[in-house]
Image (cartoon, rainbow over all chains, first blue to last red; front, side):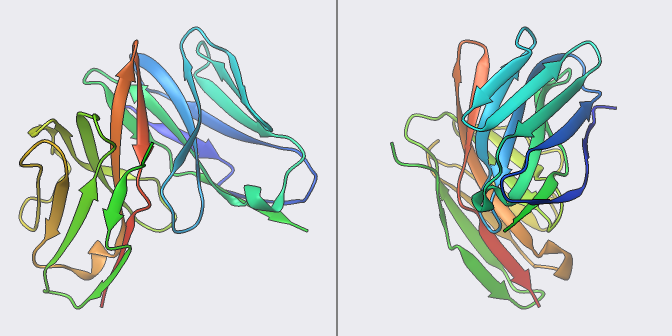
Length: 112
Length: 115
């Protein structure tokens, strides 16, 4: 079954600290993996998209990694800011019919 | 570039009433999606359109939900009659493909509360 699992479910960190969010998937065949940031009450906004051949991609203070062999991805946030408080959703595009499979998200709270 | 537009942003109705949501995708995007996102969960695909044709509506509760994209541009999603468990955020997204990568853009969503 094609699934995307994210951990932790929620995370609280202090402003200025780094954090890493995890995403494991069982989607096959795999096409690409995306990380989205979703502010409360808003639609998701794309942070990164990585294909099979890419193992790291950065977008400002956000760095995503992909290990297609172990089917794992991580999103690292450096020097967190209060505005980073949001849900971060991992999405894998793939499967036999080419679907977008969403994880449940990690809710990040950055405290002053 | 204008983003995906959705309206209304919020809607409160009583159970058994009807409600309709509207979405205007980014100009030129052939693919349009409707998602349901229950609080604390990831979005769940309800229906995917390619131009005005339905690509995937396997998870759309067709006894009460309907969607159309008559001219292949904007789209409406209707719930009739609504149930308490329909309370959720309804997200519309549109996408374009560059090379082999499809990039999806989400609208701000419509938050529905069914009382």
